[in-house]
Image (cartoon, rainbow, N blue to C red; front, side, top):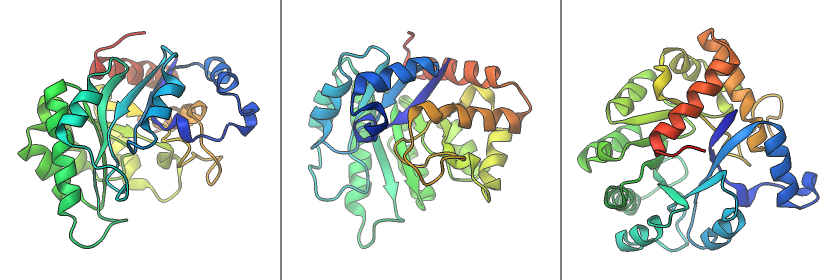
Length: 258
């Protein structure tokens, strides 16, 4: 059984499933996906996202506003705390820093990041971290705000081993996406080889970043097995070993069990 630790189920293309979410869920079961974590990007679409997944025990949610979102609601710490206390919500985020898609004075982004960390500590739920071309500030703010208290996930990992070690020291897990199946991602593959097995997770980030052989096409949680297969090859272990380890790691981090 597999777990997709990061997906956006309210944004996937359901046309192959006759635009029926229940048909999609039947395929999820057939492909042995045991649990999915549906990640919040903004608060405007959050109620519909929660409504879509609310009746499915094998789907959990997070609440947060992505660092690239500028035009929507910027939640206060109090709002994040209130939303984060929902039993369906097991994490805070996706939050973090993105200096690739943003420019100018980004203090608003750093403050939003700090607010999410503060809320996560109050509700005692792990953080889901997005970081792109901002690794030094990401680590600095995590340290300054005491994010090791909750820990969490560095999702869609694209950094180097030094960053991974620092994040692990701060009580974070490293989650690999379909990017690890791409050519010219040797540095990420090296991290996968070196990372302790008890600190790794797998994800799709669907509908984005479909793995090889579907690169450039819509992504689905059912493709997470390509990520597991690649990591198994890199570490020289069986697919079942990676599936079991990443599943156990997910439940350990979020203190849940199917």
